[in-house]
Length: 124
Image 1: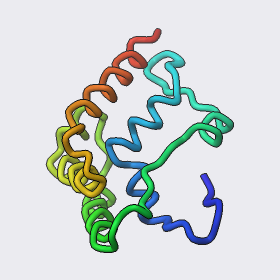
Image 2: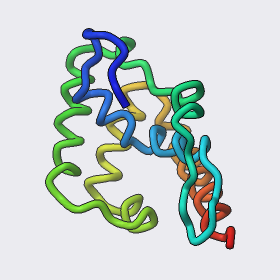
Image 3: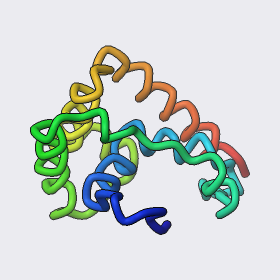
C-alpha cells in the first residue's frame, strides 16, 4: 500500500487498518484459497478497500488511538481468535470504536469478522 497524498497520517492509518473494523474490511474483500489462506488481489484492494476517516476525529482521539495501538506494535501478533481476546487488543479496538461513536456495534463487527474467518478457514 502506498499513500495517495502527502497529507496521509501513516501512523494513524496503520492503526486504523489494524483495528477490528479494518481487519473486518480486509477479510470481507478476500476469499478462501484453501488451508485458511486469504486471497486478495491488488486491484480489488485498490478499488474497494475502505478505511475509517480519521479526519472526523479530534486530535485527542487520534492521539488516544495511536497510543493504544503502540501496545500491539511491541508484541507478536497472535492467531485471530487469541488476538481478539487479548486485553490490549480489546482496549485498542474499544478506543477506535468509541472515537467513531460506534462502540455499540463491537459485538456485531466481531461476530461478522469471525463468521467470515470461519468460512475462509473451512475452504479446503
